Amino acid sequence: MDRYNDSIDRLPADFRWGVATSAYQIEGAVAEDGRTPSIWDTLCRVPGAIDNADTGDVACDHYHRMPEDVALIRSLGLDTYRFSVSWPRVQPGGTGPANEAGLGFYDRLVDELLAGGITPWLTLYHWDLPQELEDAGGWPARDTAYRFADYAELVYQRLGDRVEHWTTFNEPWCSAVLGYVQGVHAPGRRDFADGVRAVHHLHLAHGLAVQRLRALAPAGRPLDLAVTQLLSNAIPATDSEVDREAARRADALGFRMYLDPILRGSYPEDLVTDLARRGVEIPVQDGDLEVISSPIDTLGVNYYRSGKSSGHAEDGSTTDADGLPVTRHLPIGGLPVTHLDWEVMPEDFTRLLLRISRDYPGIPLVITENGAAYDDKPDATGFVADADRTEYLASHLAAVAEARAGGADVRGYFAWSLLDNFEWAYGYDKRFGIVRVDYETQERTPKQSALWLRDTIARVRATGRQGRE
Ligand code: GBH
Image 1 (cartoon, helix red, strand yellow):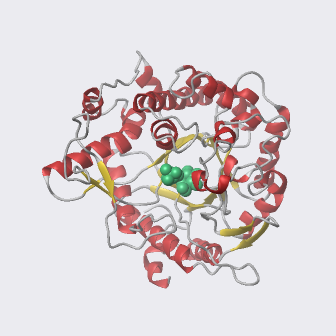
Image 2: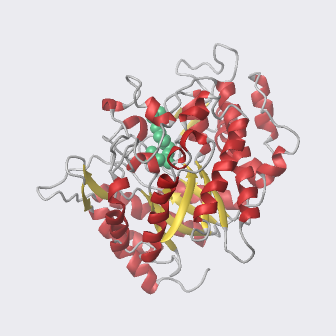
Image 3: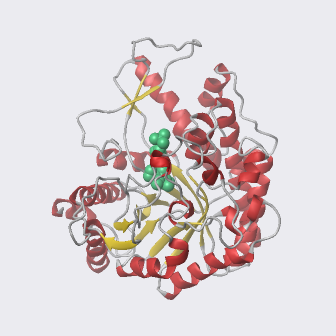
């Protein structure tokens, strides 16, 4: 792994080092202390929806083992912990008053973190919409955005005195596209126009919450407002006009649709044209884009994989049954892959970060997720010598350092994930943790990658560059 150190050691001594999780993936305790079901509890009961019929009912039992997990974070020398709040835990049903017992859990978590010298980095929404709000229409319904702003306010009222870093949404693309278009994530719906409506209402919810929190924060109290997006480059499969057009469409629908409204106050024109050809309109009302583009302080970037775009279907045709142009995602080829068959290409991460900072200048970036699933083989003591995951983290950290050297203002890096956990539609079989979880005993064992990260953090803190480059 040492061959990455020349790059990694260019990171600054005050670089932020974190690790990330999300509520439904680790907490368990789904029916305790007044929590009501979310759309994920519902999807987990649909036959065939989740590999092995796994559910988040118990997960890593973090709800009952939180102090132990905070101690683990501390033992690895991490300075920041990114977690999410479960909406149906703190506001059952998604409307009405706060549930004290549910909020109390996050209150204790925040105190535990602060007592251990760890900065809380709070995400309000990591995909667990209260089922009642889905029954009322879910994200394709505009009203859900206003419900979210109320929820954000209620959490801020309780934790705002101690939590400085607030992220509204984790990966709106996943909620909208995987949840409402492809139907592989909750709530499992399949309608392209609903997906487009969901995107707009997720953006609106973000903007409304940003305005609420900004207004609630007393003068002089620090407040860092952010949104986290899943981003990657759209690389044309070949230099042909057809493939370059496919990459442009993929970039409009998968990248610029998520950054332009928030950071530029408009949807891309080519996106609007592409959608119109499909008979779909974004349900923008007067004033929405002003709300959506309310200033934020940080952009969270989640990055996992690369791929390329082709304008040709498998049979070679360039239009589909409806006469619309084909946009197909393809592997790049010839690259190592993870347990999920995701291709590993760290140089593309550097390119992505440079592109974001060129096209959306002035906003500090934090890598809020990066990591990989590998088919870990524990030894007799439960230790996992995960050279593959360690290599993934090292090469991607080096890629971040290269992007910084090229001018990208990246302030921190959070590994996904602290623990092996419920990997959504893949259940527990796909492990992303830097810490092994034995699901029989709930025992936690740091993997080689966790120890490597601990040592790397200590070295960069001691020898890294002083101040920002
Ligand atoms: C992130 O999503 C999430 O924020 C995090 O919760 C998740 O654990 C992590 O990545 C690792 O996946 O094959 O159709 O079932 C990144 C986006 C979400 C992309 C899950 C792949 C599976 C879709 N990933 N998704 S599907």
